[in-house]
Length: 229
Image (cartoon, rainbow, N blue to C red; front, side, top):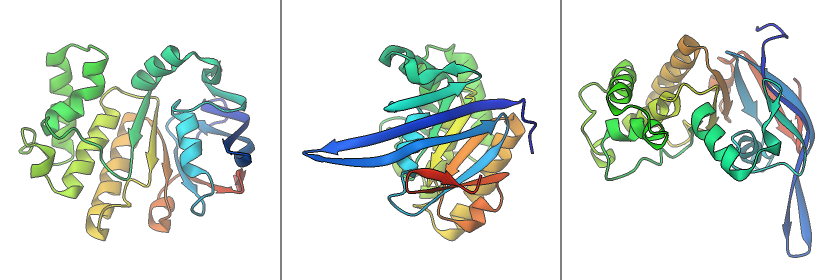
């Protein structure tokens, strides 16, 4: 377990509600927790507990109604939309249940995409992405389009895309939910090894006890609050 003075992310009293016609749905309610640098944390909870909403808030895809979200004491909840976009691209990696690869681009080009958006040096970026793809067994598949890759291979490309910008935090929303058991196990093996090798923090929303048991800690979300920290 990491030391308490090594906190990457500190969430304090955040709340989020959505209004539909005259009905208000309170999804997150005065929620607080922290994640340390290099920590791998599982986020568990029943469907509808608010896991995806929480990941969207932490990934700066949405803003909380109240509270603060601090990366190294910098409250990103107060950022402007432009500031959030810049921070999100540079400091947050995303993994989803579905890979969301761009169909007209090769595996290598998809893996490079966050760096291309940031206008990184293409040669340096291509070498970095190639090395990461090789680490997940795709050295001979880099020029293939997503349609030419298996589901497990596509998700591995998405994993490399999430890591290519050296993010502070990788957020994963049921990344194995669309994979069979064999591909799921292989993917989690690779994902956990890579984030731990690079010292990244990793928050993974999952229903799988096999996945959560391999994490450093489990956060359980119920009724908009964290239980069992």
